[in-house]
Image 1: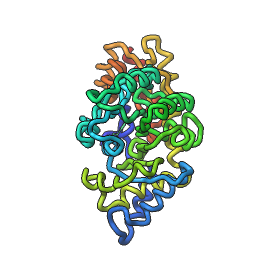
Image 2: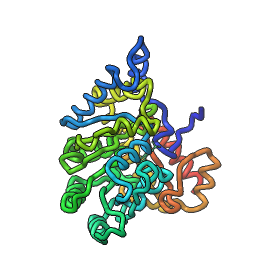
Image 3: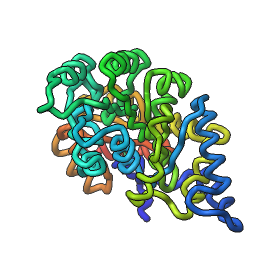
Image 4: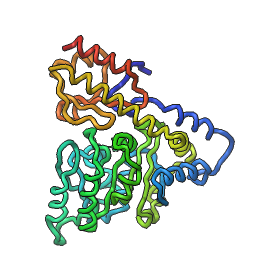
Length: 343
Ligand SMILES: *Cc1c(COP(=O)(O)O)cnc(C)c1O
């Protein structure tokens, strides 16, 4: 394994110690498969405690499955899903939401900094009401967004008011939900079910788990037969305890929030150091664990030569630098030193 930190994604980091320890504890003796075990029950209870409500919880192997199965369960094949044009659901899931829903159409809305513009959402939802158009059924939003910004509680209220008014369901892609929670410093319930969210896809992998995301149904009726959907899609883990145990390790003692806060803090430090270079411009406000910055063209090649890894296709040529639970101050200083030397 390379020792140099990879800013390409928060999934380049290894497993956080609390998740690793829980896995080791789970690797003791025998327990029933397919989620009938104590670890899965405990993980589900901890998620219910976090959200302070009696929700239905399912564990899947990844976020694409969580999103697309959740969306498929909210829709008939003749429905449509409104999401941001940069949403993972649209750009990074290889059509899985359409596939699992047997053809539900994804309709794209714009909005600054990766956040849905509520007026556009409303316009799209009301554009047509005739039988020739795929009937809008769900608004899907990403919290935090693909551009490293967060929906404030007010923003969520605006979107959920539209959903309520037009009888649309509200889905939240929370692949980095804990980073948003740490950034907003509110309770988990305030920015989910109290803001009208019906289903949340709660990310574990990028936060520091080895594998696994959770699908959380606040509207429990919508969870009807969801276990069949998971099984049919190959998303029901046989040795489920190894998917759920890391959640126990991370949710106990608030390790989730601790790691999310650390990653967010690292991004702040990195952003403020980048901001000192005249040649570099930050593209979006840094509100969670990602920094989006415009670099001069020659800098990309030079940093690549020096072994740095990050994406520059997401923000139209800008660099996306993601921090994680594992990022250190030294990693940031090393990158800044190489940028200084290259400029
Ligand atoms: C990473 C990510 C996901 C999940 O992706 P998988 O690779 O399928 O786990 C979902 N939504 C967003 C916004 C993401 O960044």
